[in-house]
Image (cartoon, rainbow, N blue to C red):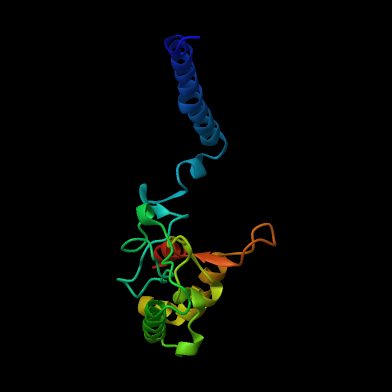
Length: 192
């Protein structure tokens, strides 16, 4: 068969596959996802008073206001940039990382009024994506006294909120217990 004779069938196949795999399949998957899991299909957006304030899947910084629970550090761009999701790729013996961890330990200890040795690991190291929206219950507990004092709330009430927003292991065995920082901070705003 001549080379030009193969061009027509190849072009038709390209068009058919483009329509099937480039249009029909993605639209079908999106439609099914929208019907079965509308919240997740839209990015697990968190709304407050009718406006989007974030996503329960992407962390954000609360560093400018000490009356909020603080997220873990981010290595994504300038911090929590979903377009630059990544880890720092610095090894544990890298001098830059060691310096950064020391600085973060001192800052967290000072902010929360705890000894440096009592600062949880997730206050010191970014997650693999740099976008982790959760902190450990230990890191949340380390922040309870500061948040309660700044907001003029009893520690027991703030601690109860932390407990309420602590999620257990997925399916009882996967992952670690965790606290979604955005949801916890929104709950704090709701009580004052």
